[in-house]
Image 1 (cartoon, rainbow, N blue to C red):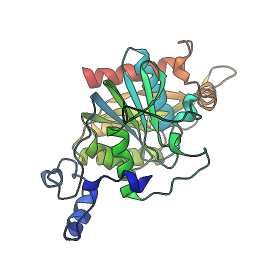
Image 2 (image 1 turned 60 degrees about the vertical axis):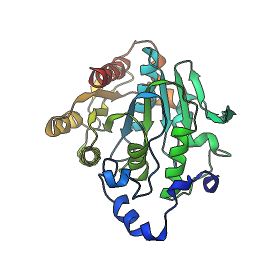
Image 3 (image 1 turned 60 degrees about the horizontal axis):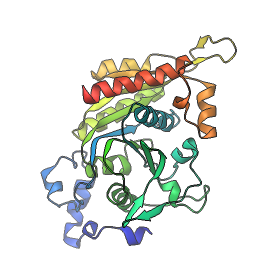
Image 4 (image 1 turned 90 degrees about the vertical axis):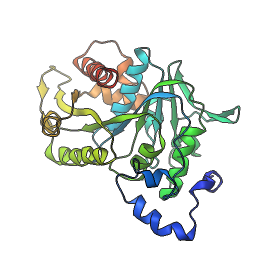
Length: 301
């Protein structure tokens, strides 16, 4: 599959190898005129009808980034936005599981891949749909990931979108750099962190990475911000509180809000029913909805 789908214009001539090495390691490759001119062999921006591409990333794993992406995309669609959710965690594609659509297989229509339609307003694309089973590992190097990302952008029948929410793997590697280079109308990045210092340290790196790409940081979301006791409802600062807001203030970027740990949210993800589709009957639901409202205000305000 990967060999078949590698775009021809990404094949490098021997004379360009040194240029490729130099450009591929440069954090400003997405805004560099030389790279856009083809020195690094980058394909052009994808032909995608979308108003806003929102990148969701984190400096480290385990902060609930995919959970935030799913509930954010679903919340946007519930507010009348046409939304695509692109799962680019090639090695751990969990979005289909969280939406209860992991058994779906992709179909072709008019020579394009049809995404999985969760609702009339929300469509999803993930590497998980292309694997023979959920335990199959993806063992790919960077160029193969780049080819797949280009295909997910250009060869999927997304239709007109208000938002494309892109869930990235942890860190600042190939996937993050490639989507920033190939996606049109990238509005910026949402950084998800937990409150403790080991997480906010890596969140700072993510913010600096986005800055070097010449993109704005839309804001910081502090996930697992306190825990609501399932028995008495009292909030416990399990991982601390306020770390995300603190780095947002330090870096002078918006703070979109905090979401507490909630057992019901964990259950919702395991059961494939996004937490946000529940009624607004809990502080956690209100927190997720408030984060979504803050994001829309920053992006469209």
